[in-house]
Image (cartoon, rainbow, N blue to C red; front, side, top):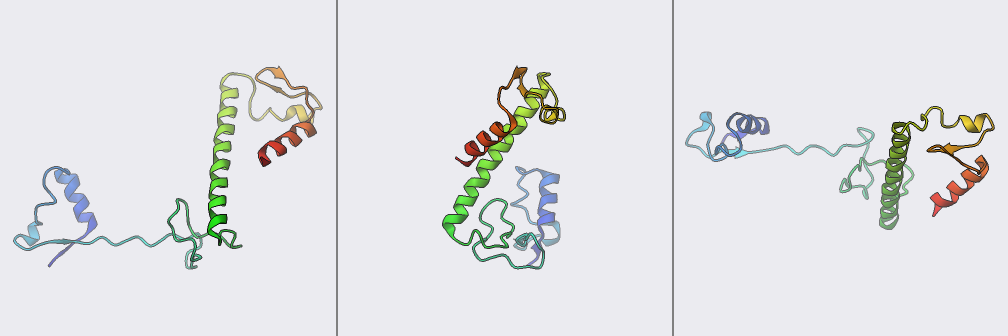
Length: 148
């Protein structure tokens, strides 16, 4: 039996198309014999090549490259909690990026000039509206809201 490599199968699809029956044909080199396809599985990627991943990081979650040097995710319950926290943080970052881009697109200031009010002892403004709170109050409110 001759083994067909994945690249050969891909070339056959690109040349003949997926619906042309290329899967039902035997290669020209092997007419009359049954062909067997083999595809090598790609090794699991690791954040540090050559090092073994912890047993509880088996690659089943997206973005799992075996990085947990302090064993924070050794408990399945904690691992699920950290996964959920990462999703929430990603969503907050997407909202922040949308807010930055929206403010700049509307012409109400630039991202680089936004913190100048704190340096110059002025007052903050957002979308052209002045903010009556000082920097320590804003930081405290943000810490409380983000901790919830």
